Amino acid sequence: MQTEPIISMRNLVMEFPGKRVLDGISLDVYRGQIIGYIGPNGAGKSTTLKILLGLIQDYKGTVEIFGDDLKKENQEVKRRIGYVPENAEIYDTLTPMEYLTFVGELYGLQRTVVEQKAQELLTVLGLEDVVHTRISSFSKGMRQKVLIISSLLHDPDILFLDEPLSGLDANSVMVVKDILAMLAASGKTIFYSSHIMDVVEKISNRIVLLYNGKIAADGTFDELKGQGELGSLEMIFNQLTGFDAHEQTAKRFVELVTGGERIE
Ligand SMILES: Nc1ncnc2c1ncn2[C@@H]1O[C@H](COP(=O)(O)OP(=O)(O)OP(=O)(O)O)[C@@H](O)[C@H]1O
Image: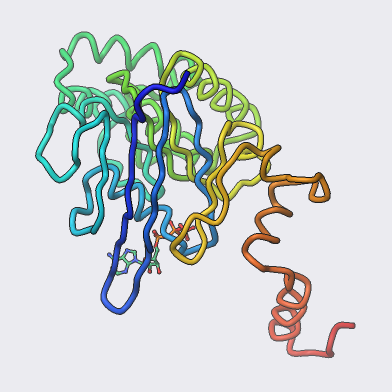
């Protein structure tokens, strides 16, 4: 039985000077769903996430989270959401412990509670030796793990993820995929934006494709596959976005790079 939507967008329109990025998005998201939110570069995925997070406010249409209109100031909503941004501002001069206690305290958690939780979560993700090392020396994947932990410290009900697996090695990807599946099974709602189609295909129980500012497809992977001619989400993506010129594009690129002969 479907209850009330956790996230509800109605006729969401977002315009930047000279450009309409979101052109009437309507979407209801329910508890426990993992929404794979996909679309070509520049389609408006990050813009949608920023609107849902309250970082962009001059949109048209209605957005409700937990039934509350986002245009009305409501700090309680922010306490119940977590966010892993695509390009994170992470405080390089801090150590993971300093960064995580800072974030935890912003969410109103007690310092001793956050310290213990941070220590345990860092240890589980294999960062126990660098808990007190400056983040500036970290690899991309190590930073990403700190960000994932920071988004979950306060045990949010909704998690917004923008390319969350970026830089993670294959083992860590498996761990994070399992974490997301278990969080969703425990009733959390996950809004997952990524270009890694085979991962989106595996972890999402609902896929939403954004194209030309509108929702071009919405359903489970099997529903999107339709009659079964297209085997992968990558192929469905290419078909729905009308892109079949990858080989010609690559050929032209290499010809220009090498300045040489035409490639046949
Ligand atoms: N602050 C801004 N001012 C003007 N234009 C913007 C602004 N932010 C985003 N845009 C434009 O809005 C469009 C959508 O950007 P957005 O970052 O939402 O795309 P995306 O789907 O997340 O893309 P990608 O897959 O490349 O991350 C782009 O054309 C971008 O240039």
